[in-house]
Image (cartoon, rainbow, N blue to C red):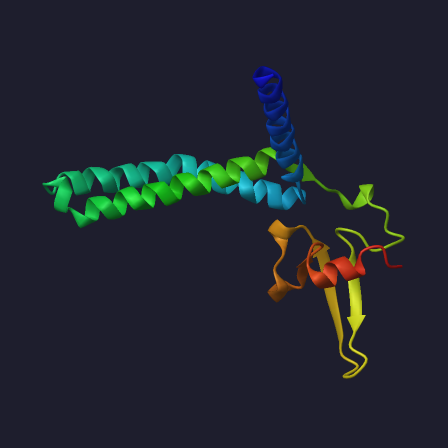
Length: 155
């Protein structure tokens, strides 16, 4: 009885993990994927060597128990490795979108839309993008934002 219960629990756990992996898929443009790969390569190469150098310099300064520089360098290393891990996951889960592959008869990801504020008669243009690419300052809003969700599917 216990082995059956544990197998069911294991199956449910594995199913949950698979669902999480599938939900991590991110849709990006080719340019964004290229930027992510470039940053990842920089962090793995030059970034890691710089942090290793900082740790080595801090070690040379004596007792590691009371060495604030060493602690700071190790903390920076942790943040650096976390960023690498996040980028690796994002690159693996990235799916490249091309405007040619998208139905432009209705609003969807990569669509450019114009919105007019009826009160002020001011018109704004937005480009609907994935969460990773969103930047309101340059007119890119996420399809998962409230405005983005409201626009999806409109003609």
